[in-house]
Image (tube, rainbow, N blue to C red; front, side, top):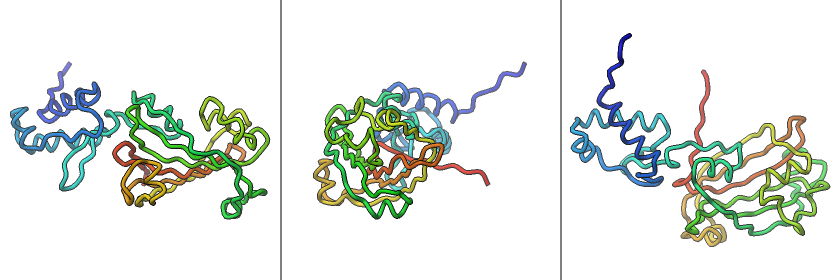
Length: 236
């Protein structure tokens, strides 16, 4: 049997990956520059670049032109289909939700756009925070004002979860359409998130349906790019 010989850049990547996954190097941390890493591992800068490329491919870091390489999500990708609370918790990132408001609202624009019979929806607006109080997202959801949901303003979410609440009302998310862009926070949004007016956030909108194509949720989310990353893949 032939034993595979590990290349220098693979060994460097393995050490850095272990430090990231163990929490020694925490999410959001900027890695040392190429020169410093080359000295640490006694390798060339080309070897360091190759190692960083491996880490980026594994979604452990992101490299920003002119700024350097930064750790992502404690080295683990998030699956938003699970719901952000579950997805973050699965990766060891504990958060809590602060409900800003839950209320009934007429939204004829949304009803017309996706073909709803009624324009009345339940609006749920929440801020997600890290345990140190840092706000990392502002999440606004609109769900149909059906039986089992229209009384949410008075009773609140089941187990604090939109997914659980929808499921108990007979709505199980099956497929969605999502759009992504970036934009600065408005003054009101910045105040809710405790950020300077105009701070740049990721902005996603997601429309979800059940397996039998019933409307379940329209989510409008502002996400701190230092804590969230969305990746797309496709086959040609």
